[in-house]
Structures are given as structure tokens and as C-alpha cells.
Image 1 (tube, one colour):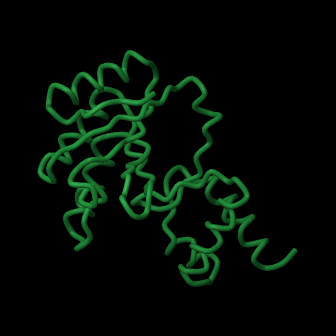
Image 2 (image 1 turned 30 degrees about the vertical axis):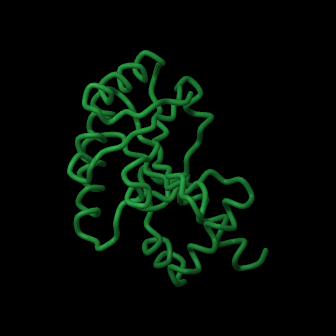
Image 3 (image 1 turned 60 degrees about the horizontal axis):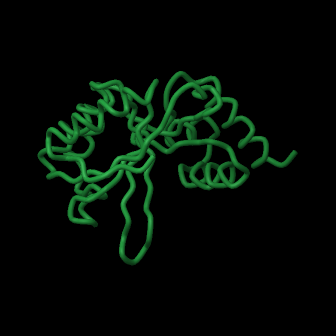
Length: 176
């Protein structure tokens, strides 16, 4: 087996055994390669249908078959930068997990970024990074309009999330 194939097999093992995300830097250090090599390995693994999410904390193996009992819904929202943390907390406080953020860009089409925010601690870490880097959130590309794929234990929880977002004025529309 080639060196790269062995490394990618071991990356999958590490992700499967990990209880949380692994950063590209951690993986690069473990294999004695550059972070860019890890980014390329992850791209190759995704190309063969490996469910690897790139979150703000690192790479995570996501097994949707383990969440068969869960339901998902896409919600369309719009809010200011100052309301971002409240919007995210509203979703998790109602029992949802924010899987991603999606924008529809006029030139580039759909841009999706994995988030996997499950609780307030995840959101605090996300907000800390958002405030400490010069980059802007994706919603800035679309005047605040964006979508989240939200996962929950039941349709009733998803309904409650939409209701809470609507009460706060964040909800645009939904697509199941």
C-alpha cells in the first residue's frame, strides 16, 4: 500500500476513534506531514464518499446512519452580526443541532460550510473565533440572508425552533 493510502486509512481510524474534532495541525503532526497534505487527504477521502465534516474545531467523522431517528430541516434566516449568537443559541436551546450554514451567492452558487454546533459551549467557541479573526461570516455575502440545516429528535422540536426564530424576527421561510 502506498504511503498516502496508508496515511488516509490511518486518518480515518483516528477520526473514528476520536470523541471530538481533530485539527489539521494535529493530524499533520501525527503523520509528520504538512497541514496542506492533510487538507488534500481529506479532500481525497471525501471524494470516495467518506463523511468527514470540516468544523471550526477541526475534522470530524459524521455517521448519519447513527442518527437515523433524527429529523432535519432547512431554515432560512436573516439577522445582524450582533444577533448571530442569539440566533444560534435559540436553535440549540430548543433542542436542535446546527449542521451547517449555507448561502446562495449570485456568482458562485450555493456555498455550504459545516458547523456542527450542538450546545452553547460550541457556540461560544465559534463566536470567539468569529470575533478574533479578520474574516467575515458567510451571511455578509448575501446581506444577512442564509440557511441552516438543523437536526433534532423530532418534528415537534423543529417546529419549536422555527417558532422561536420567528418570534425573534430571524426566520424567513423553511424548506423541509
